[in-house]
Image (cartoon, rainbow, N blue to C red; front, side, top):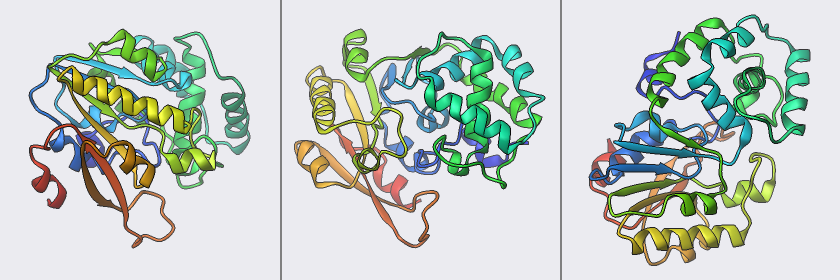
Amino acid sequence: MADFRWKDCPVVIPYYGGKFELSRKLVPMLWDNHNRYIEMFFGGGSMFFRKRKSKFNVLNDLHNDLINLYITIIDNYDEFYKESENLLKSRTLFDNFKNEIKTIEYIDIPDPLRAAKYYYVIKNAFNHTVFNAISKEQEWHKEMLEDLKISRKILENTMIENLDFRTLLEKYPPKEDDMWYLDPPYIVAGERGDYYFHSLNMDDHKALRDICNEIHANKGKFMVSYDNREEVRELYRDYKITEIPIIYAGQLHKRDMKIELVITNYEPQRMQESLFD
């Protein structure tokens, strides 16, 4: 059964490096006065699952398996449950599913069997990362599937897209009452090449900055989460950059405090309260 922390933010998958804990500080920093909320790189979706739901919500990610999982849970939950409930924790099963997930990139959505395999790998992998080996400590039981009904309820009446971030902007031209949240693949992880299915190069990061400029020019609001790199500071030098100290999940040195950069085109309304609560 899910613990109380998860019920405050009922994510479908607890991505390692995701925003589950950091979202406690970031959500109060979002611009309140918006009708449309758009996430460009949805991932584990901690911000969306923790915040108050907006009138219109657009959730996008380029990763096909991830979007297949979300759409399957919404539209084909019973089939997904049936495919998942009898899977036992097994290194052989895990390795077979993992190899399949890593080699097949695009599928027709929805695909409940594929979603079950992807969910199984993510939930059983060390640090919940598909590139890692199976973890003996991770839980796997039917109650987790029942808990997804809570996530499913929150995902109802949202628009879920599977687009490149540039195409997303074309589909949803920025408007004055928008709140865009961008949590792009970080530069350091892209350099390592061991975390994201779709990393960004520097031209992509510059294109993302140009998108923020367009949101700003159309009087929308944006928040971007980034790793603490000089390239990022230079790209966003014309905007508000807030430093947030954080200890990332899975760090080998627990006391090694890192800095997360949070970039906005507005003054965060409850910044001091959120940073030090």
